[in-house]
Image (cartoon, rainbow, N blue to C red; front, side, top):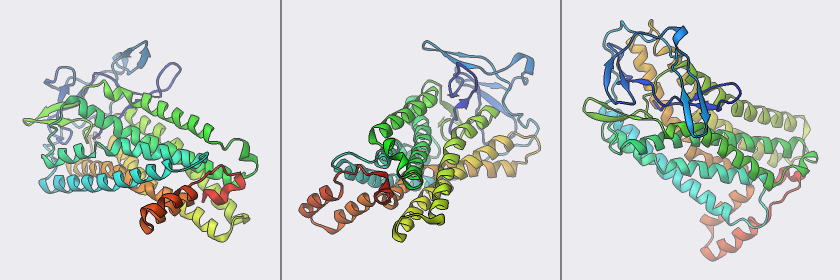
Length: 404
């Protein structure tokens, strides 16, 4: 289970935060006699008595470069009386996950690299949608490069041979990619909404410069929010092997549940709302040609497919895991199912890097045309054609046509 940053509310506290020192299960897949692992000392100790509400509360704040942490009672109650319940990954499961990550790595690396190459050949001023898609491709590539490490983890039987720092980086890039992708997809949806529903009124604000400002703001927000993952201890010893706590071994807590909701809900609702309004506008009677309406609907379908396949299952599974795993009435069989679902949906989130090129394909006519020429023309013809196809895209917003 990836170590998930916690969210806090209130003035002077970060949007997401994660305590630097806390006790973690030495093996979250055992639901028998629980032992806890001190992340500061790397020693196993018997689980201490549960803290009382009067003596515990998590607070996390940045003061200069220091991180101030207090203790917490927000963790969910754990089952202390259940029998031993082992859910270690089988050899077959590890092999399947390892090869899946390799396949996703190849597809995502090639698709997003090709997208950036095509976008880089664009002449003139880019459209806002193109700017957001470029940043989306960068977000995907930033995570794709470490997928071989996750594959190796599974090929070696859930052993992490790379050390502490790579473990932190894997978790950091996992969440940066996931939430940056969510927000860039929301930005694309908002731009399409303005282009289709408020074509004339949006001409003054739909500029590439504003899109770049928004994109860099997204990067700053997500990077700062996830930065605590880079300074917390994330490896532990279990059964003579090293495990990376960023991979399927997160301690369930209510704060993690709050973080889940705060990070996922805003971009999801924004994307869904924009596309529903676009569909309503197209159905009510848009001036777009039927073929362009169809392209618009395909773009919407591609984005929502990414949500349904990659993001919704993970967040629903994580919420269910957090709420159910430590409940005293949950059976070992149910815990095994929750752990398996958590591993599977974590893999599905990585598919967004391979599926995002569908958004480029369905959402940008110039990208689609250039892609056809890459595979259908010789190099000389392709170069000239690509330059012509990708030439200046400073559309007026009657530009819904060029957007789709």
